[in-house]
Image (tube, rainbow, N blue to C red; front, side, top):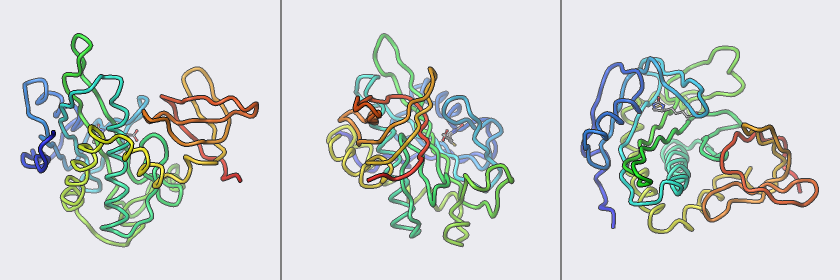
Length: 253
Ligand code: BTN
C-alpha cells in the first residue's frame, strides 16, 4: 500500500522555470522518490494538454508538479488524472467555498470558466511505467484576464474575493492529491463515483467532442470503469472517448 503523507515532505520552491513539469521530470529521471513536489512562482513555457500553452504570470497562479511512481500499466494512468481533478475541485469547494465542477477529463471549472488545468506526462521503459509527472496549474490571484479569455477563465480571487498565495493553496491541496491518488490505485470505483458527483456535465448533457480525427455530437452517459467518457450518438450508438476535448452545449432531459 502506498504510504500516506509523503506528498509535500520534499518541496522545491523555485522562482522562475520553463515548466515545473520539466524540472520534475529531470528529478524523476535522476531517481527522485514519489511525492517530490516542484513549485515555481513563474513559468516561461508553461504548457497544457494538446500542445496548448498555460499562461503562468509571476505570483498569480499555483504552478506545481509532483513525481509519482505508481505500479500500474501505463494505459491505466487516466484514473490518476481524474483523481487529481477531484482533489482540486474538493479544495476549492471545501476550503474556499467555490462551486467548482469538473469537465472531462480534468478541467476544473467555475460558472463555465476554467480555474485549473492538469497535465500528466509519463515516462515508459520497456512497456513499464517508470514515472509520472502530475502538473497542476491553478489560477489563484488574477483580478482580470485578457479580453479573449474573460468569458472562459477565472481565478480564486475573482470567485471568492480572497487574496490567497499559491503556496497556501498548495498546502491545502497536497494532502487531497495524495488521498485521491492512493484511492485511484486501490479503489478506482470510488474515483469514478466521486468524479461523477463533481461533474454534472458527465451525465445527460449535450456535448461536442473534438478529437484529432474530427468531432462527434452526443449526450454524455457517465464514465467507464477506466475513466473513458461515454457519449451516446443520435442513433443510440455509445462511444467511449479516451482522448479529446469536450464542449458542453446544454443539459438535456
Ligand atoms: C491544461 O488544462 O491544458 C493543463 C494545464 C496544466 C498546467 C500546469 S502548471 C504546472 C505544470 N507545468 C506545466 O508546464 N504545465 C502544468
